[in-house]
Image 1 (cartoon, rainbow, N blue to C red):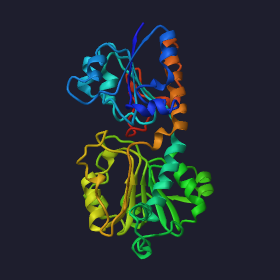
Image 2 (image 1 turned 90 degrees about the vertical axis):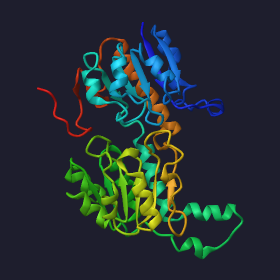
Image 3 (image 1 turned 135 degrees about the vertical axis):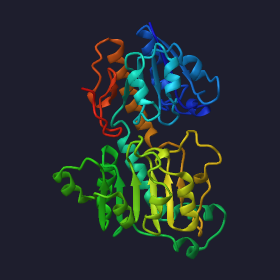
Image 4 (image 1 turned 180 degrees about the vertical axis):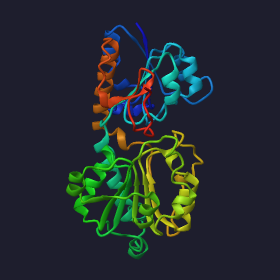
Amino acid sequence: MGKVLMVLYPGGQNAKDQAELLGCVENELGLRKWIEEQGHTVVSTADKDREGSEFDKQLVDAEVIVTTPFHPGYLTAERLSRAKKLRLAVTAGVGSDHVDLDAANKTNGGITVAEITGCNVVSVAEHVVMTMLILMKNFVPAHDMIRDGRWDVAEVAKNNWDIEDKVVGTVGAGRIGERVLRRLAPFHCKELLYFDYQPLSAEVEKDIGCRRVESLEEMVAQCDIVNIECPLYAETRGLFNKDLIAKMKPGSYLINTARGAIVDAQAAADALKSGHLRGVGGDVWFPQPAPKDNPLRYAEHPWGGGNAWVPHMSGTSLDAQKRYAAGVKTVLEAFFSGREDYPAEDLICYKGDYATKAYGQRVKKG
């Protein structure tokens, strides 16, 4: 019998209001009863950031940890060194950058790291297109105007644009990036571009009507909208810094639903406040929960608006929660049974080595 530690976001009254809010700490992915029936114990907490947190206390003898990108339990090398029994780390969602993967491969003979690939790709892609429309249509200032009892069409129309005939580019054309491009095709954009180390097939490019660009700087210089969908690893951390943002087309939009640390928050906020960027939006922050002094919370375009930032929510729609809860159960079944027949696409680290190139095209041992 082993201990399964879950680090999930707090639900409070919302967990009582909505039973389908599986991803919160109170509802435990709907898996407590099943895990206990397998002979294991479950400890759940949202307390993860303070010194001496419940997360730190419970991790010491946990055999499995399940956490989420929306409220990540950061598995640093130091924490892993104290987790003497840990054998499996599962992400209830997509993205394992909250784990020090190099350290995981070296700890306890190699900790298996898995995520639920594909569980929320539709959810995030829909959120991205929504964010593009919210920003380009100047929705937030227009809605605020109505709530404030005001009416000035010119004030909100002067920054209201169409997506049609614009150049849109995505950084990363994996499961989410490709779906974003597909959803944009009916908008009749001038051009759909993508930057990725791995090209889409010629058939997919033709079907979508998109084109791969070899240089990121070249792409951002011509895009009216830049969308980020690449994983976070050493080479993408701080990728969108002051210098790269300065190379973006004046008056363009920047959207990030990948990982917060890919974008320099202060540089993006400054570019919005100066008017170099017309809008910024997304739902990913670093760290999470986002500090109250994160400049992207408050930055605005000189004409007002231009800010479509929300909590990390795009990938945790109620539909996505059902999918990633089911996926976590599948991974746990593989572990509890001893078969270790994990879905191959879900594995990030296995037996002390990388099982994927997604986190920086790392070369496998041997």
